[in-house]
Length: 243
Image 1 (cartoon, rainbow, N blue to C red):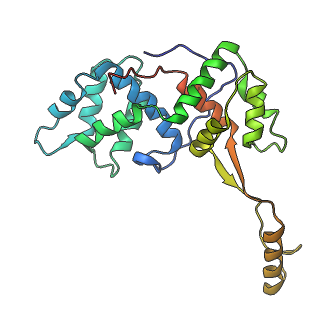
Image 2: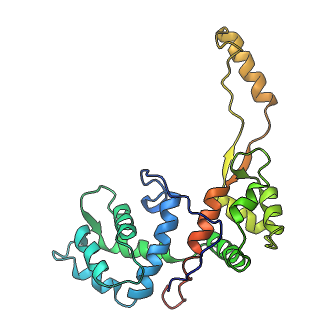
Image 3: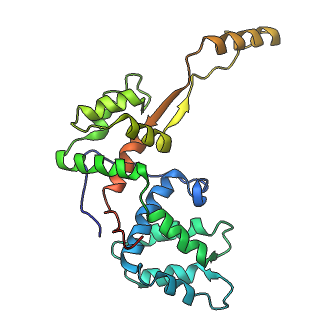
């Protein structure tokens, strides 16, 4: 099920340890990896995953032991399923970290994570193009980061991809930025030169800065964008009959 694609220059930005905060208890980085893990599991076990999980509900209370589920899935010999990635997925499903997981919720989450979003579809098309070209995409996109911030605006990203012969529409860019973008505006502290101005003076300065600062910009992180392309390029979409 796994493709042996390796993008030149698409080095992985390892997700930094953090609390699970996104949908389903996952940060965006952890959710991206969990999508890959879920697809691996369903590719092998789509016909009997429900049966496997329900057999572990020994007391018929709708919950299963996380450690037992972890070992059962490892024993199922899912191709290329690393113990660490499975552990991270199960950890996100045990929000209270009590060692137990709701059986039906776990199954629902696996199917939800395994399905491809609109953003996944755009990233997969870009990943396929990059794989054929052997482009060092991360270094190439950095050339369009005129302020050296590690981020790009929509127009900059579109231009950078177009110069790699990868055309993306405005609607596709909107999808990517909705999923992966962030808004940022210049930081102001409201203090005068030596930081010791009066309260009134600081308020006046702050008001003036708010009036004069440029509008908030919508940006996408180059490293995370390329890492997402690398991740999705490592797996094939599941066939419709699985989902």
